[in-house]
Amino acid sequence: MDLDQWIAKVKEGQHLLEDELQLLCEYVKEILIEESNVQPVNSPVTVCGDIHGQFHDLMKLFQTGGHVPETNYIFMGDFVDRGYNSLEVFTILLLLKARYPANITLLRGNHESRQLTQVYGFYDECQRKYGNANAWRYCTDVFDYLTLSAIIDGTVLCVHGGLSPDIRTIDQIRVIERNCEIPHEGPFCDLMWSDPEDIETWAVSPRGAGWLFGSRVTSEVM
Image (cartoon, rainbow, N blue to C red; front, side, top):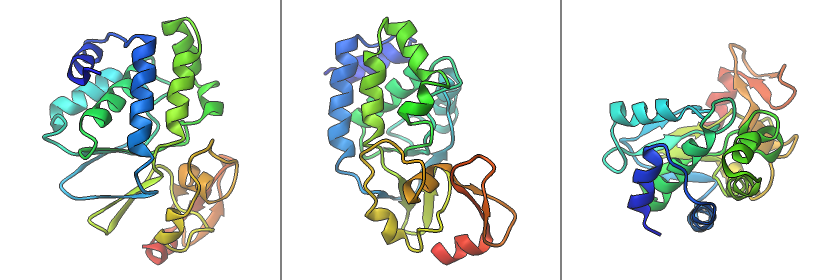
C-alpha cells in the first residue's frame, strides 16, 4: 500500500480502486481492533462532530485547523449519509488512520450502521460510484471495529450521542461488545443515540432510540 499516494489521490477527488479500498479496510480493522472502547487521547487535540459526507467541508476543516499529523483529531462519528461524498470522506479518514494511527481517533456514530446507510444515502452512493455494493460492504465491516468513545487527558469523555441509564461508570463502557451492528436498545445503542437536554435526569427520546439526559446524569458519570 502506498498510503501517501492514495491520500493525494483521494484529496484530489478520485476514488481508490475497489481492491485498494478492500485492502485499506482490512488494514485499518487490524488497527482499530487494538483500541479500547474508551480510547485514551492526550491534549492538544481537535474534536470534530458529524461530517455526513461533506468532503469539501472536511478539506476546509483541515486547511483551517491543521493537517494530520501536525494536528491531532478526534472525529465523533457520522462520517457518512446525507451528503454526496460519504465515500470520499470515509476513505480519506481511513487513509489518515492507516498512515497516522496515533494522531487521529475515529469514533462510531449512529449512522455507522448497515441499516441507516441503506436509507440515508451511503449504500446508493457506493452502488453509483463502484457499480456494485462491495465498497459498501468493506466500509460497513469497518464500522463494527470503530471505538465507542475517547477520553482526553483522563477527564473529558467524547461520545457520538450521549449517556445511558445502564452506564454508571466509564468502566462499564470498556466491557461493551462493540464488534457488531448497533443494537436497537441498551447501552451501546444509547451511546450512539442519546442527546443532552436541559433537564435533571432522564426523559424518553422523541427519536425512538437512546434517551434525553440532563446535567445531574453527566456529573454522576464523570
